[in-house]
Image (cartoon, rainbow, N blue to C red; front, side, top):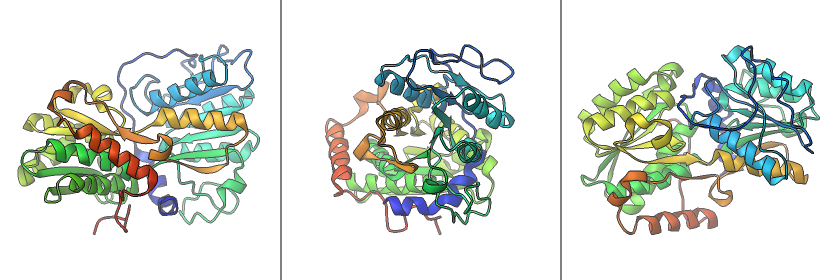
Length: 385
């Protein structure tokens, strides 16, 4: 499974257009000054390891990638007996990624966590320039570099990142496993026997894996269920991941044509529009990556669960491994075996769930861990024909 995942470096790297949604929440920690430079107070005093976090654009308390990655850094620091007051930097736009990373480097931080696809190239450059500093790139696997360790814009990926970037760890997740669990939920609550899924773009391997897993999970519950799927676009990343209006309009047409009673979105912010369309149509919706009941409350009335990447756990585990001297550089894989994936709490929809649903989810997780449950077909992650 791991070898298959790492074959899609071009697709992952191409997702630099993803923009994270910002919602409300609270975190403790030292932030950066409005100019984007790391504030003087952002020093991990009396710590063995200095850990800093550079988020993506938005806020650190977005109930999404920024927040859960930051919470993982806080938990990792606490595990090491250090202060949870981990400093963080929030860029005002993409032009500040490199300078904020460099600010932590200049202050001799030992571990710098960078959050999301968008920071991949700047993280690679920083890791090459500072080979003695540990970098944790959240959702940045697989790494694609040229033979000199530079970001590879041709996506040939001929460089050995683990050798060329000896302290860069790129975290990746088994999306098909999370999708499989979401499919079990969808099939368990469906009354019509027709469920749906909409992805952002056909060349997004993680999107495809989510949906392929979703279909297999649904069919493990009901072999006769119909799983209708579609993608917003084949080439336009802005429409695929950053356009909720397009997402809502596309989903309205999809619902009218296919009549699903559960709809899974795998399209970033565009997917928020898909969730809105599901709510408007009076059908159930399933979120992606994080618990969208929390990150996108506008659709709470119809969200039943979300297919999750356990971002906090992955960051925490990686920090602990670095401190223990056991962490290897390169791509780091998170799945059911190491608490890397799951589905969200059912929140106010718990009473709607069949009494045997949790047992089915537990059995599927156990099967993923021992290898007896297949969560993706032989063409896993390949663009749909």
